[in-house]
Image 1 (cartoon, helix red, strand yellow):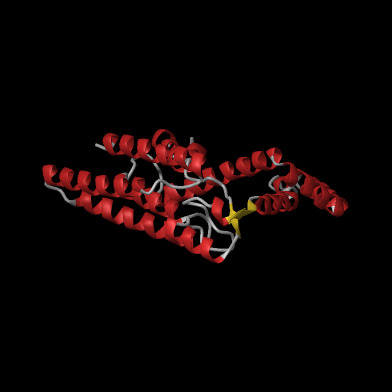
Image 2 (cartoon, rainbow, N blue to C red; image 1 turned 60 degrees about the horizontal axis):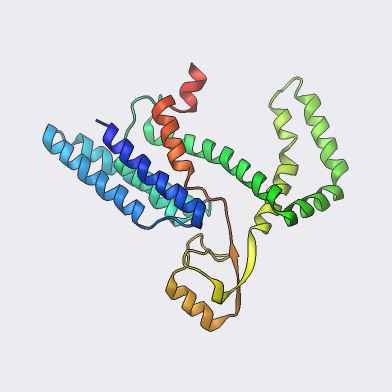
Amino acid sequence: MIEIPFITCFVLILFAGLYDLKTSDVHAEVPALLISFGLFYWFLFSLIHNNFTYFFNSVSAGLIFLLVGFLFYKAKIWGDGDAWILGGIGFLVPFLGNTFIPYPLSFIFNLLIVGGIYSLFYILIYGLLNKNVRKNFILEFKKYYAIYFGFIFTCFFISLYLPFFFLIGFLPPIYIYAKIVEKGMKKKVKTLDLKEGDVLAKGDIIGITKEDIKKLMAEKRFVEIQEGVRFTIVFPITLVFLYFYGGFFVLLLV
């Protein structure tokens, strides 16, 4: 019953994730395909089985996912394209059978965990490959290295009694590193070199359009654009993780 929507959803969001990694933009047609195919499939399925619970589940899950997606967008956690992708997943795959807790909560919870792990690796690799980020982090770390090491050693000794303090000890340098990477993801470019989908720094996380570019070219010679963690690939990873393993709650209970 869920296999066709699952496979279709996975293929579409995998394509969106790979497209995002390549272009830093979400393909506009993918959310529309997710939503339209989801509504069509579950409406037809409900007609055949004379049970519209399936269609109502699709609508309710889609709206919940979409609402959460846009709340995250307003909080500037991700872009509007990711919000629509999340909503589309809800419409097309409105339930999975082995998530232990209600599916919408399970998906959001696991998405945040998988996304957090992915983002840490992303900014770590990004920083290691960026000479300016490495240089600025070393300079910043040298300013307060005694405080950092003192905090790490203190948390290490406390962790002998409270193990989670071991991780807390590394939070200050990780935070400093993340802030430096964030600054390194901003760059000044000529308006002539802007392309559709670029995100302006200090604005909403939404790609600019061709009309926006024409307006900017008429007003300015240079603008600052913001790179970010290319997050969309986390959606197919989370979906597969939930489908085959049931999520972190299920793994913890095994």
